[in-house]
Image (cartoon, rainbow, N blue to C red; front, side, top):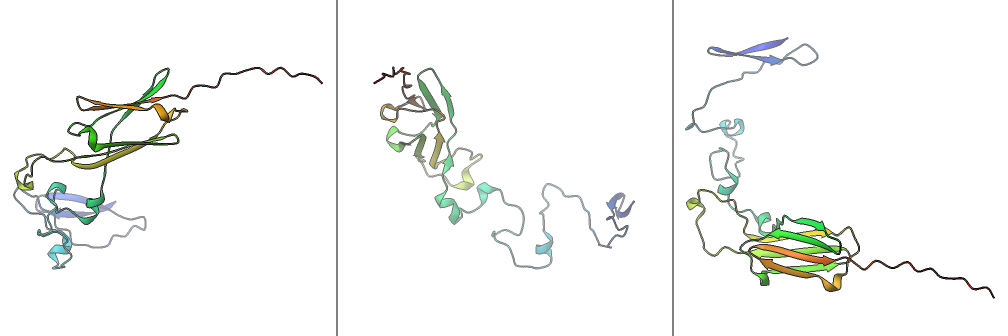
Length: 182
């Protein structure tokens, strides 16, 4: 069972807890138009706990002021990594990045790709209709699951696609050793 909460013509059921009792609470339900502003309970009571310069209405991430923690943020680079008979291939779409803005390092079996995509023009946030592209520093580190020859890695940037060719290490050939008796 439950209690009924009414708002004009609309009736809603409020579930009871397991003890069978329900606390009485005044709940105001109203429908909002597109132009109505959402006011949160804390704001309605006069609490001054707002962190945005708005009146408590939700703010889209693109409209927020850049916070300090965002200054050190690096975007994650999406990659494809696969193997051929002799190589491990890493590919990534990184349009708008110059070859000199990409740094590839290898440590043991980990390949790290870092770079930066810079805006060429300064556009006000208010002038954007959509802002979905990532601008700034990005990085990605992956562990290559096979033995690699880190001395002969090659990288190429063509048509906005970075291709890193990581040669597999030459497999040790098995050699039989004959044991001589003394």
